[in-house]
Image (cartoon, rainbow, N blue to C red; front, side):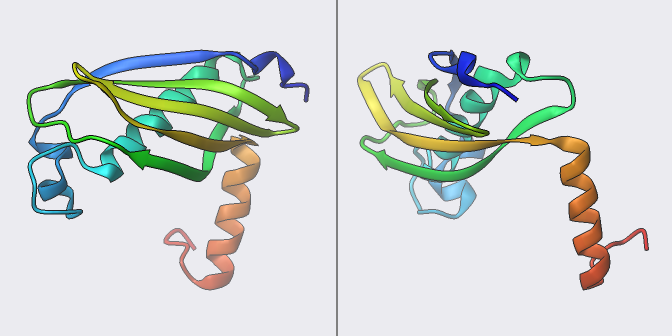
Length: 139
């Protein structure tokens, strides 16, 4: 499967920081600001959405690595823009440049790597593994 055409694709979206994504709510600190885990989730969503419509039917991406810096705090009520740009494609491995910003500037940046998978094949392998380990609830 050729995926080089994905290089340069970009996606961004905005979200308002609410109580559900603060550090105090997700358990990553006791402060009512955008949590680092929530910022990572925004990066994952933007990265996935950047390429999903360009993938063949039955394929999606899964995150395999995140290397980011959370540079500035964003309080509840402020708008955050998450952006992902495909920087490199190597086989089924996609490297993204990710940034998050609020009204005051960049609040986070880094690199995110995702891998293109065939969803049916992935779920079959997962089911087989779960059956072997006794985790399959349908067995």
